Each structure stands twice: as structure tokens, then as C-alpha cells.
Length: 111
Length: 115
Image 1: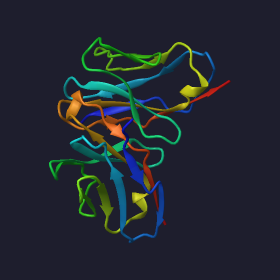
Image 2 (image 1 turned 30 degrees about the vertical axis):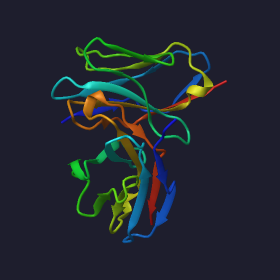
Image 3 (image 1 turned 180 degrees about the horizontal axis):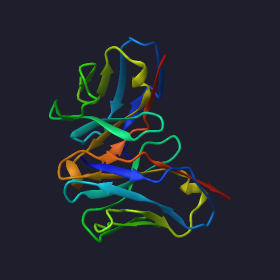
């Protein structure tokens, strides 16, 4: 079956530090890959996505590249801000299937 | 900006009681979903709903669960006889497209605690 594995959190960083949150997937075909983010007190919202191999999704300074050879979609940001503190969810979907999520990784950024 | 709203934000209930979680999806969306997240575990798909019927459901969505769109705006999840293991955060989502072409818009979640 399809699955997503994310690194365990919380990830604790100081402001302006470099962020990487690892995500790997298992799928029976070629999925589309997503990062969703949940800020405190809000619902999950789409951060970025990539629909085919070597695509790079980007938004709000975050980036992730779809790597078929390593079945990965790691989330990166060059300089995090306190306002980036949230829970980040990696997810995939195949064709018309519903989203399959990882456990989520909490990011805590201190000033 | 349109958003998905869920009520209640937190409900505490006794084991065996019925619970209804309510969601108001974005008004022009056609596809509706329920997901749940047990503390410390993955966000799990429960059910999807389109054209007034269930289009897909997971093995978690057994006979204790039901969904309904009673009045064209609300989308409800009912758990008939709650169990301890139903304690989780339940997320409603809606979309105007199906599958990997469409973004899902999620509500804030309803936390259910079964005692």
C-alpha cells in the first residue's frame, strides 16, 4: 500500500536557521506529493506540491523536490522565522485516490 | 477568504454515547472528506463523499460511522456508539476537484475525547 514516513519531531531551531524536514514515501505508481502545514489553532493548509519526478514545489520560502530515485520529498527553508512554527505534514495521492499523510513534524522556532 | 468550519472544537463524551461532528465546507466545493488523527499517529483517511453518497471509505469507517449532508451546507460525521479508541482529532476537508489535481481545504479539527 501507499505510505509516507516523516522525521520525528519536534524540530527546534533558532530564527534564521536552515530547516530540513525529511519525508520518504512508498507508492505503487507515480504519486503526486504535497506538504501541508497546520499553524496553531488553524486547519491544515496546502504549502506546496509537486506532481512529477524532478519537479520542485515552492511557497513562502519553502521548497521540496520530488526525487523518484530516493522516493523522497524533503522540505527545506533557508532561513526560518518564528512565524513558521507549526506542524508540517507530508502527503501523497495517486490518481483519484485520497491523500495519504505522514504523522506530521512539529517545528518550533525561537527568537 | 472562504474556509471550512467545524464544530465543536472539543467534545468529551462517555463510552457508548453517540457523537455528531459538524462541518460546513466551502460553498462551491463538491467533494467532502473526513480524516482523523489519533494522538501521536498519522492523519488517517476515513471517508469521502460526492454527489450525496460515499465515494470511498477506509477500513476504519465501519458500521459505527456514518456521514450525511442533511441540508446542502452541513456535512456531518456520526459515531453511533463511541469507543475509547475513537478519541482523536477529526478533520473535515472539502475540494472542488478530485484526486491529485485538487487541493483539499481543511477545517481546524474537532477533538473528541471518549472516557
